[in-house]
Length: 332
Image (cartoon, rainbow, N blue to C red; front, side):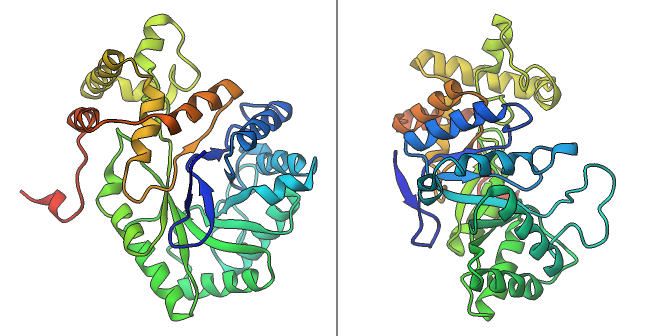
């Protein structure tokens, strides 16, 4: 396994991040434990989750599964860089009770205590804001985070789904308080969806944040979906929902087909190349992989050893051209 520092911090993390969103909804507790065992055995030390994972009436279930895994041995918690998120309501359905969502100091305090209980730990390494809160000033947010850091309940704070200007606002507010500020940004980024290159990634690099791409296979579209469709082996994510809707776009379908044809010519697996491509991108710490099985984890691990030549990278850019940074991306 390769390791890198998380943004401008001294924290060393693996270049693949184990995403746990499927733990509970897609993979039972025993299967989830097996995946975490395999990930740690392969050297993956960065685990990502969120308080709302488990979804619906089972929100919090994913954190509980991780907590039960930690309970099986103290060395596990010592080896893992644990990241979780807060923002959304933990109510099973319907609107949140007032002050039970978003980034008020009251909800940050409530959310971290609940996550610590579910995760069976006394501290969280990277505590992430799952979304921006337009109603709460950063001075209030950072005051709440400062208290948690001093209490030893969290070590670092980070963002997810923040636009570039919010990354700047957050870190400028933290600097005024003499705080480290955000250390990473978790954003949607892959070969198909490259808009993060316009402002989010430049802002993250300017302020020294590590970039953690989520949905690196774009919901399965970059995992050989058309080949699986022909073979009648489309999985649950590629066979319906957003992926199916996306493939109804003839232009995108043509790009996906060109992508699969190109990699077939080179004897490469689409999913592995999609991950390996992200590992070549400036500012990227490591993509989040969310395996439902140990076999899917094995495929992701192979991406670490895959070297993409300049010619192949150029061919990938020709199929999925990025917009480039702004304002040049808006030039006539």
